[in-house]
Amino acid sequence: MYVILIFLIRMYVRTSVRTDGRTANKGGKVGRKKGSVKTLEQRVEEYSDIITYLKNGYSIRVTAKLTEKSISTVQRVKKDFQL
Image 1 (cartoon, rainbow, N blue to C red):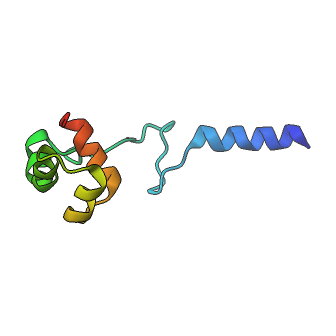
Image 2: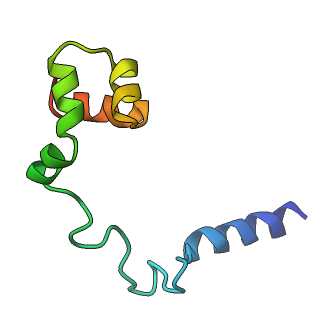
């Protein structure tokens, strides 16, 4: 019984089927699409309001409320720009 279960788990892990049907083992491309990662300039432009509030000494939670962004976004911006 356990042998069959382990065999099935190994088969499932090996195929790692993506949503479009391709698999990593059969030569399919896996990972982020080109251009999906924002450059530093794009992030500065998109999060300029967060950067401004953090530079002026506002806390992460207050900045998140004022900008209507999530706390995790504000934390990520603070970490990325070392504010």
